[in-house]
Length: 308
Image (cartoon, rainbow, N blue to C red; front, side, top):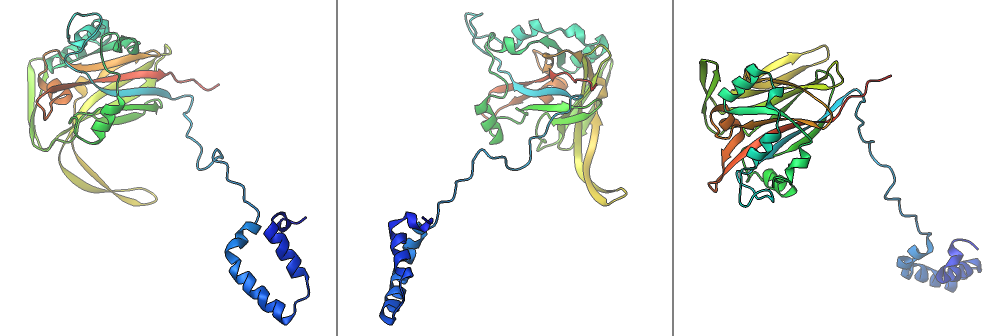
């Protein structure tokens, strides 16, 4: 039996078409075919539905074995939280900081950070302390939606997991570009440098490279973009492209250079009583009058695996 013979209507059509056509039968057949055209789709074989699990598009990008993987997290930490460890509300940062090894930072850098309202160190398995001291997990889904809607804060609230080849740099916005001009003061020892910057934006540069002892040395430092955009032309062997950039103030004296093992985290935060650069970079006053602070976490999620 043919595919058409599987349907009763189609079988009748086959029988009719097999007979000799007279004049009257030919006219009847024309009328029948015209009136039955909408039903003719039933005579075709059903096509198979494409497999939704079939492979489509490009394969997922793989991470090179020799690349380290870092989690870079801008984490809003409230000034008050509740925990089973305390009878009432408490400052969760004061408890978290007891677990931070500040001595992992060299003394000169630690002092320069402190003069500018910043503190830093290294912490083991920070994820184990989050719920214990009553802190929200970094990059909570509802906070992400609020941040995308630009109603939460001027400070970044995001999480990035990225591969870093040896010496590779990645840059992250600490906060949005300021709508107004700001006076920025940098202190180093007995000296201070103050500048009035046009619509500044605070950025963080992160770099990673393998250390000789098997750890990964993470280096990070802030810089400030400011002033109007300037256009320039950059040429190479193939083409000429237009580049747009602003003036930049590199704060290399605040650079942190810290070796990390798997699941260790570099933490950078404003001091308990924020002031100076720490206050400008990592704290904010929300429209509802509440204060916010953000802590920067750089966690070694995976060490590089040297190729054989």
